[in-house]
Image 1 (cartoon, rainbow, N blue to C red):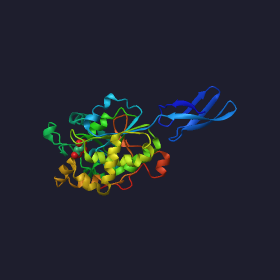
Image 2 (image 1 turned 90 degrees about the vertical axis):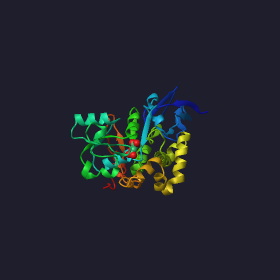
Image 3 (image 1 turned 30 degrees about the vertical axis):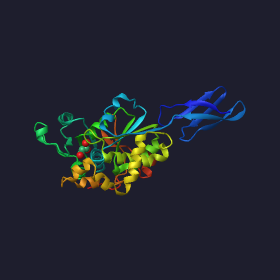
Image 4 (image 1 turned 60 degrees about the horizontal axis):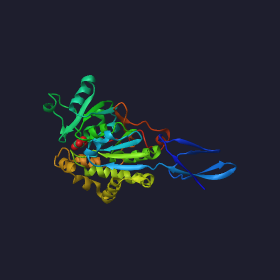
Length: 323
Ligand code: MLT
């Protein structure tokens, strides 16, 4: 007869020990482990383990990320998607050598960063375009939110403070989580491989949306990540939102550009000749091989590669820096 215990962990990758009478079992965390062989009272027996299931959930709309303050995120890894364009742009900036990005909650906060650190570049958009002096009391921002502006020549070696309509607010709402990663098609595989190695118990994909609505392109990005991680998370507690996102991605994956171009924000960008190329830029797959993370200090940086993943070329330098 198997003995039933409840194995619960507060660590991402724990080594667990459970003692039961004269039996002692030591075992490593294993996704599939259900029964662990133990030597007990002179007999070989099987200890049946009930492992806390993983969870995978997608939040679609800004109203949902606004409520994150009410959730306990201490064991949750959040991945924030603002495919058009905030997270794509931040990933591109880091890929082109920016030292760090400061995502701020609004124009006033961004201006405050600049007052304290005059060397910081100011970036961001309102209504899709660069923030000009009439919104700030005279200070024009250095950059908008087009990833194509964030070239090595503009941002190499610089810190950039940015405010965008939804993306920067979504990132900040996730700050209490165990880790906050930036999701984009540009570095999706590196992000998926990192998550596979870390094996977080709870994975929450947060779509930034467009104004107060869900955004098609963010759901596609989240769905693409769900698809990559399905072998790991598909057997756990998968929220219907994750099923919806993955199925939408599978439906649209053969022509992501067409799908994203018809989204609300896609149509807005396509209607502006100087911004229309951003849509094609942001649906490129695997341009960068690093993971971007919002640190506890409030800065977004390239996450330092783990030794093994650096060897495999997963994290670290960009594989093909955008120009
Ligand atoms: C946002 O944060 O809402 C977006 O990134 C807006 C955009 O750049 O068009």
